[in-house]
Length: 374
Image (cartoon, rainbow, N blue to C red; front, side):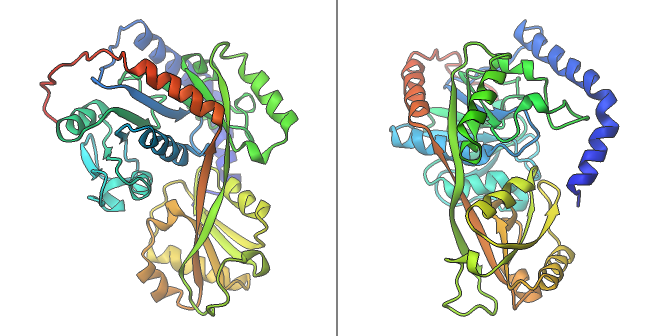
């Protein structure tokens, strides 16, 4: 369990090394750009969705919404994802072929599993070798585009569209490069981006958005910048505990809840609930991609009772790793609710993406018959 205070102390210790790490990342990018290190090309277009930070920009729901948009336009996208926290290794691990889940969350990792559960008709393949995973998919499935999940730093695979997400509430000019901060690369890396989406724009004022966009122009002159909205879709009760039927979570603001999550930026989740009118009595934070054990569920229940809460809320990502059977056995009197998040892509971005899809019709089939085995 890593608190925000402890993370800040660790970043402070790592600050002297940020410059070294940043230069290494810039050198790596330069070597790929000059083809000293060669990236591999898949025979269908690749759309990368990534970010500069270690997390917290809403990448997973954006991947889901972009895939839904592609499906709505009549295409057959597939998701290529590393499968962080799972057992895919280099892959390929077929999490889903578009109908039904072929791997559980411990195998796939929390985010790939969540993507697969929310995308009907969209295959999800996990593995660190995304090129190999792509070839595997093309031999078995009718794929028209790949959506590369968390792909901005995955330079080993060529892409036709690089989408970079920036959290509007935490602009990158106020952050430091890892290990002294949360940035994976220096902000100048945005020069590789084809477009930028400012996420969580409904959480900041219009004047602030103008300031953030102006700051980004110092790193990218030509890439169009769009906005997206990040909000609560609904809260589902997955275990009622001692709640009566009338006391569902349709009106959580009237009850007061206890919240827990394992996210890169947990405070963003808590603030989202508060702005939706949810009364939070207490919270418990875990490290990003935390693997929950029985002792964690006991600790969560104990803290919830201490705060006098009979409702506990968590994210979809965290719920994926919690068995409702275990929850009911350990915290039988506590209700458990899952907060479903949705992203609203701007109409201008949708039009931009439509234009790029038309460009993709001219995509060169550089690999007519892949010979590598997957």
